[in-house]
Length: 180
Image (cartoon, rainbow, N blue to C red):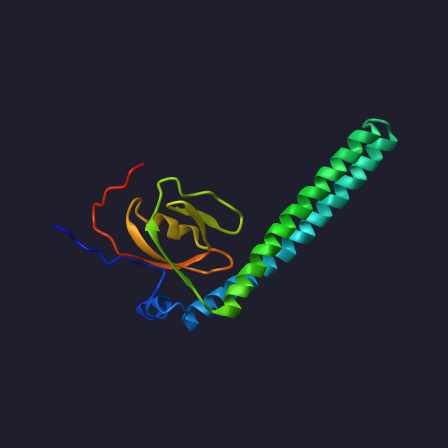
């Protein structure tokens, strides 16, 4: 005997109606716009802090090099590491925000069906990852990850550029078997 559950995650009935058609609802577009604005202010703050830290590290390394505490090759390695790390983090952050902006402008969603894997969560400063069978998707709200039941069949509504899950609904059987 099959029992179908009706679990809805992060969506209203109007949101789901639009998502089933492959579109974002106006409420979801506004929420995404607010999140992008929030990320951009965080990015500005983070970039300022990273730049200040890089300047301080550079000054300390230059002083220690002149005093002959650090050899020149080691000082160069420290500087390359600091600048490389700062560039990587800012470009990663910027790329993700740009993908969200493209998704906001397109106002479309992709429909993905699948089961949540037991090894789902990996924390990132901007999002939480969720593993759906063989693909990894992102959640902007980390609390949503706890609402997904491992092995349960869901229909996910995903932003195509950024792979962010904006809504989901359970479409499977209760107590379905999932091989780990």
